[in-house]
Amino acid sequence: MEIINIDDAKEGMTVLKEVLNEQGNVLLKEGATLTKPLIGRLKSLGISAVCVESAEKNDNPDDSSPQVPTELKELECKFSDVRGNEIMEELMAAVKEYMREKGGGNGIH
Picture 1 (cartoon, helix red, strand yellow):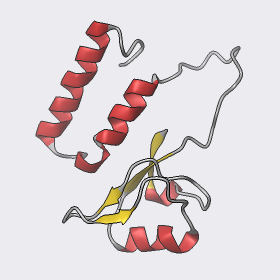
Picture 2 (cartoon, rainbow, N blue to C red):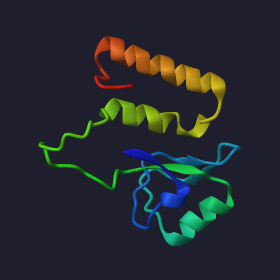
Picture 3 (cartoon, rainbow, N blue to C red):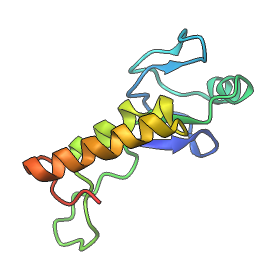
């Protein structure tokens, strides 16, 4: 799962977190499949990012690129609606630190 810029959204991607407008109304439900018209509509409504199923699934154990823990991906998705809010960014940083200390987020930077 990953948060992507709406400009990088592709037809066929699966939404993993509800997309809400500023009033908290659901624009897209979890599990929805993106289409070109939906992506265009989200852009026109000012939605800048969506949480989608990762398009790149790396099944190669020999790949030396660092893997982001699932817990961090979930955290990023949960905080995607409040990006730019200083207090919420600090809260997310505190949660990451807690995860690091408890060992639930090995490799979180």
